[in-house]
Image (cartoon, rainbow, N blue to C red; front, side, top):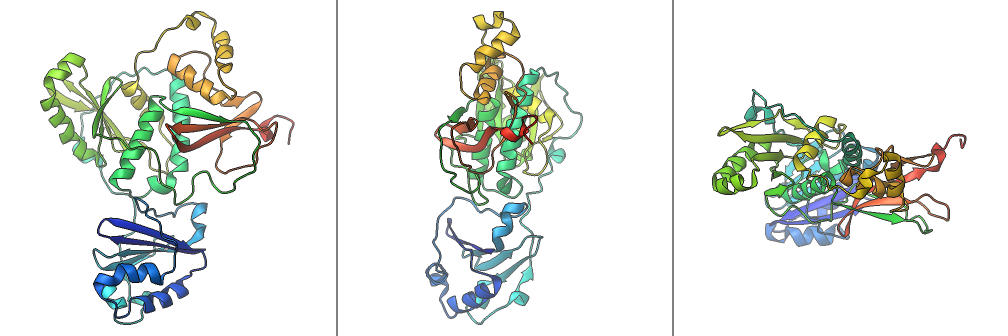
Length: 398
């Protein structure tokens, strides 16, 4: 275990970690670093006095909630803009203290006042989206629902250290962009087949942040629906009304009068019906804790899907379609992705021969004969989601 430090100063964010820093060391060290230091010199005093390798992430992560957090005894946050020190511990033990105290004398945990835990924001969508609810008739092929739900479930798991707490607007727009990539099957599958030595560690660590590009605009046309990205679902409704007013002529031309309000934690599908907005019941979505609901995936896919392209392969028996798809890649995941796009072949059973295809969470050794590892990528950036056939799942191997 160790200590994780954040420093906030005029929109700049710094982060450092020491595995050999425990509470007693930190309290003693901080009691010396800021004594009689002017407020204007606090940043440099902390950066040099704590003797850490500092990096500049774009968001604060509270990595508590699963086994990966055992590295961190305490998280210390210095908010120099508010002249305040906050600590967080697993289990909800939190405290805050004015930095002016540290500049005057040594301090202990008894000097801290209890403060609010860094939980997820409490945005109740049912206040803004009240009854009656629109109940659209949805048709989405089950193959798409099952495949997409599993990928979203695994994405939700891999990035749970972010999704279950608060995150800033940049992180939010990156998560929304990832969801749209997955829902529209607009992602690549990189297949690893060569031997390699295990790199060690998790594919997604407890301090990792998404590296792919964020959604550029708040409202974007995806398939046959306008996707409205709003961290607070209630704030998405005025955006919809404003967009309808500004793009009335365009709406008539494109026949797109539907909006998908996406707050990541909830989905709401809206439509303009006889001059009046109506909406579905808000559906829980990704929160890093709960399973992904099938209903949420159905609405997401029904809203964002385009018309399926028909090919000569559609004339073949479905079993032959499946065999043709398997020739396009070495692993089964990319073939399943293309099968969803074209609605070809049998639904993916998450099997590679006799092996169960399972989520990979750590870097492992590869040798000749190791099953293909299929990594989901958004452009040039790894999504954190990867799959591989589990040899131990073959009947008779245990």
